[in-house]
Length: 297
Image 1 (spheres, rainbow, N blue to C red):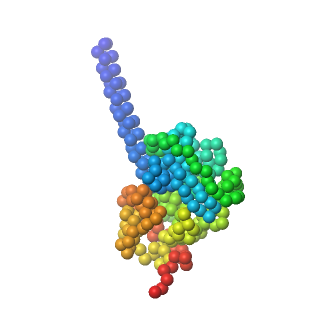
Image 2 (cartoon, one colour):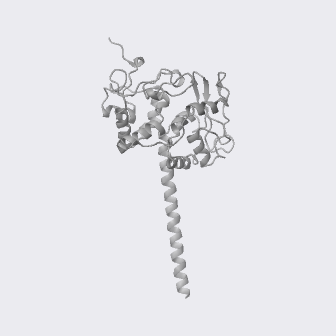
Image 3 (cartoon, helix red, strand yellow):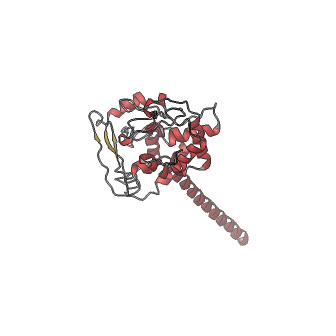
């Protein structure tokens, strides 16, 4: 009887060790997936100053509405998001609201992030929790009236914001839908590459058709397959090379903000995801934008 009990204890102990090892391995995989999502979502570019601590905030973003400063999203309990839980992150990404219910300005691209899947939010949260805390206070936005009144965001969201996860188009391929998810939701490319109206709403009728008044007042080009003002003359390998290493078809390289996007985000795309993005971009409806037509010599 004692031998039987001893053997049973050994079996249970062995099972618990296996389960613990399995749980630890799964945690590592979740954080690995979260790091990949973190890169594709572009969190570093906006929430990290040049040569500053990772995600400690303070990057200035000049817009027609004033200057926004990105917040600290490290795990600091009072100056960052260390007091948040996963539901708080989900609420921010899906609904554009802070834990206390205040509406975020759409300079935080939640109109695109709302499409991120629940599983991806969970994995992203697991990775964000590993970022070391940094005791850096947030800067106050410097905005023009009436945009300085944050309570107006309730009305803006009511009129212009539709929340909800990405819904696949059943008439398109799985690869196309993956590309659409990466471009429209996780990668939020339209937040820079699409024009906006006078109250900052992205014009989805001209999706990715170029924006003369992009971040920091810089022009952001048309990346639809229009032959005259977009990337209609680019091959699939041309688009892939830009995403992977920032190289243009003429062998020059992108600069300014897009260089940072390549270095911190699109350069980490897996080969299948890069192919998906290329397929989606090349099958978009072409948008002619005269602002980006090369003048005749």
